Length: 471
RNA sequence: GGCGGCAUAGCCAAGUGGUAAGGCAGAGGUCUGCAAAACCUCUAUCCCCCAGUUCGAAUCUGGGUGCCGCCUCCA
Image (cartoon, rainbow, N blue to C red; front, side):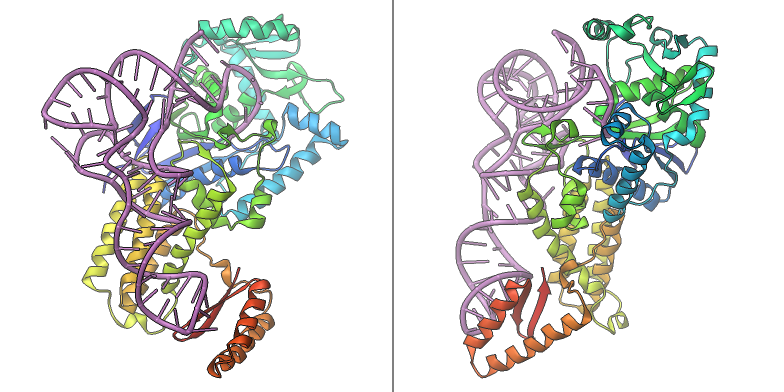
């Protein structure tokens, strides 16, 4: 089997993936700031890194996966005061909603899901250590990171410090309030002072709150250690968020913060970034009203994670139609009773082997889920074309197994009728209809079919009688 | 202004030197009382434009054009 290669933002190249310690993989993904409902963009982040950690486990790595929740932030505070509730209440509310969305989308819970407010002590200690090491300074209750003290600043975002200073100078004019506190306009806050009436904590520099960038550095250090294998997140975090994390952590520890920096691209609408600030987003809650979790997941995984996805209802619908073929082929895994009596044929075993190789090849190549999914479709064709029941069963189990590596539930939602009574009623009606058909009373038969269609039940006449599915 | 990315059929989307995966839609067919579904078959002489390197390029180089992201909170 080929080796895993990943695109590392830090080097700008695809590199072979070699964890620091043998089989152990330490992975951290930046999660959401919980001040509003999660949208399709958050779903992409969660699903992409969910698949990466699932796959790494699948090939045998001992993975510790951490995804944080930012629950202290200016936006949370602002939003809470608009709503007249406490920031804690607001963030807790949206944390629960995020968890609910994740569960619906079949995103596995991370091994650790730290919330920033649980690690304030570590953040204060981190900041103090940076001050002691000469990498940070206090100014009127704020603490700033001294960018000039970290010579590699800009290496992740490929930013030139002089250019940044030019840009920052313009910013500084607009934000004079802070400018006088910083040694350099590009210095960023580790700790921000706050009024005691606001959300905050006591620190050696007075009452205040941690800076956003510091949160991740402190939590990574506390939970995973000084050097981790994979640090992941949305591409908008490359600069400045991850750049600043690197500056803080590497200035303090003198060693790489992460071996591989992986970034997912965005979901766009009309070729424009989907974002709360632009008001063009689709919430996960909303989408789940119309589309199945598998449809949403497949839609996201059909594109490579580093390419933008242009979201349209039409393309989601197209994905939903396509997934039916996968589900039908997978259904052979459970149908048939005495299927295990015969061993799969050599041809079927060979097909399965080829499939597994192609699947691994795709995933090993920077998690190319688009290719992996196309292999799923080809396997599905192989299943429907194979006349042998035992082969179908064997291949369908392979299909299911690998679909689940991608986090697809493969639950066929089409037979969802509210109750057993309802199902039995429909079965009864269809029995009556088939009697009508036997009498060549097609007017009655068509009336029944039309009426059932109207209430969302599709009737399909086949050689073995009629079957139905609820849509 | 600086940095980075993308441009492949009607739509979505893989492919980074060897002659265009896959999905949706479309066409034809099988089945059927009809329909739907299912299943089978077909569907880009060509990969934004120009020039170059090469036996050979969608893939590499140079130059254009268009679009997007980051540089400010953002997955």
